[in-house]
Length: 328
Image 1 (cartoon, rainbow, N blue to C red):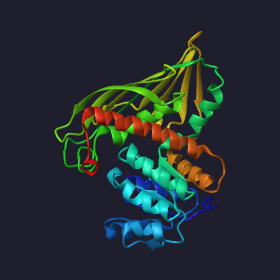
Image 2: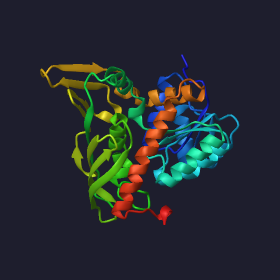
Image 3: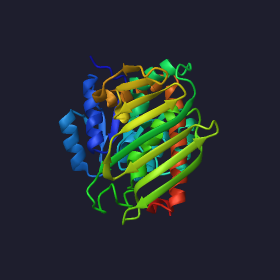
């Protein structure tokens, strides 16, 4: 049964776009249109997923009257040039992480969404995983006491090639925007408010982007987060939220479906499972469609989290003296 209610257009044909199209298929539907800077790739993508419309230019998706929602899956330094026209044309927009390069761009996008009555959301998988809503329902009542500290790590081992997108400054590379956004989003999910104090240490790659970093955050409630990121050293994707009376551990937290809760008074452990890791993109699609239909206001909360995380990332890069060509 087709669970999709709206026509989607995809801009970009990379790995995550393929996962997204496969997610639509798992929900019984198909993507309506696709555009890519290299049209031949869009044609091949359309053939693979039975997509009926291929745009001559990716920006044409914004002006297709049959399109309801645009999903943007280009390198993040190109996001804003596709986000704004789509919103101004009255399309809802789901954009891959990091949603923009900096807070200034995101503020422009949020204003355009509000002015045109559109939904704007970031494709941050953990915001949409059922596990996190289950944890919130279980523990926001105070069963574990006050939140004290969040820890999260994320490390990849990328080829040490300064021309690939992970290390290229021209393609807005670096650990922070590529994988650090996950760790910061994990922290923001648990913190009661955004970070107001931001400290860090960074090691830059020869290309000038951030190769690895250690980040320490604190908000006005005194809650803290300690994060470690690396692009050329593998780390477990492990997140921990530490409370007065226990702690929650989640492995592979960007698409987590299982958490282990340890109660510190007696050492008892509880396993909580919800959702399926391989359905992560399906959950994003369904939540976006619910928002487009006016069902619930979760996407507005997630967008505020996105804005808070982007503010922190903008602050960090300012501290590091790291700017991209589009920002000069």
